[in-house]
Image (cartoon, rainbow over all chains, first blue to last red; front, side, top):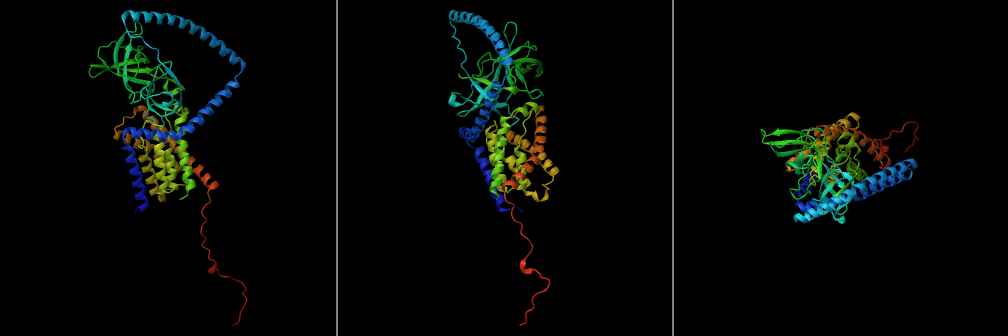
Length: 272
Length: 188
């Protein structure tokens, strides 16, 4: 026989859950951000401790290591200067051609550096938390990327932190295009979606590509710019293999992501 | 109700949720993050009152969902159901046995994600499910199972250090004492 206190507790928990689950989306999001805000001091302390350890590590680094790093950085600097000279020339040429064809001038991506401070504790989502929020000008649906390629998009924004849904999460489906590695021409377009048939977490599926497209392993997959969230031309990954679907009506390809999403430390947010 | 014990359980739950989000080393090695809340719910269900179980399930679920893509509140009911059933059957469970703690932790850690996933699918969400999820489920169940006896041990030490045990009532009654030996004889 259940006691009265049992009935009251069960009723109370059910009531709270039902009320919270049935809140309108904006209110639920605000409540979620408020509850998540309780963890801010802990993330702050953990971040400060992490920085302290990094600084301590730097102070005890041996002189030989530092000299080697300086040497490497000098070489890299020279290489980058040469590339910059070439790029400046290409940029000037590009601007002239755009003016000649009366095309709109392409602006460089404004980027903001962010540190990954946490990951979604649930295993059934692919999301991370970064240390920039609305205070830093971050808004939902902004693109998150690294030097290697696309990471995902901003899903929720708090004052000092944001939630990023990464490529391969069911909430981050988008249009992508396959490029030929030689002449960079577009071979086919499809939708990037999570892969259900693989044990490798860095593989995603590129689905709904027209049958008969000339797809080959190793071809580059980039964002197509359709859908209005991601800019065109951000690297997503490379095709691993291709299979036909729906009696050859369309093709599906498995794509190896360009970014190792399991080892993210710092990312760039495209603040546009 | 022992409020110090309840506060300690809630504090550990808060830290557990934070650590699950902050530390990614285990996820990088095993490919899955271990959820410590079911183990705490097992402890609370067997050792604390129903109010503590309800508080832990509600606050723990909210904290977990606030750092996750889950809709806020979706993890509360699975945790509460597990805690409620354990609390209801606590007299039938040998909670001081290591094996019982391990098996209860295993069952709770396996059930909690399943119930949460069912709730998510029922709510119209589309969680990431693949063959890899089976491995993640096994890791979560075994990790939670390993944490449960540790949780019992830690709270036992905590209670011993900070909480006075209730004084047991003795069956000895001084007014019923039979006094033997020579008694002074009184003539009336």
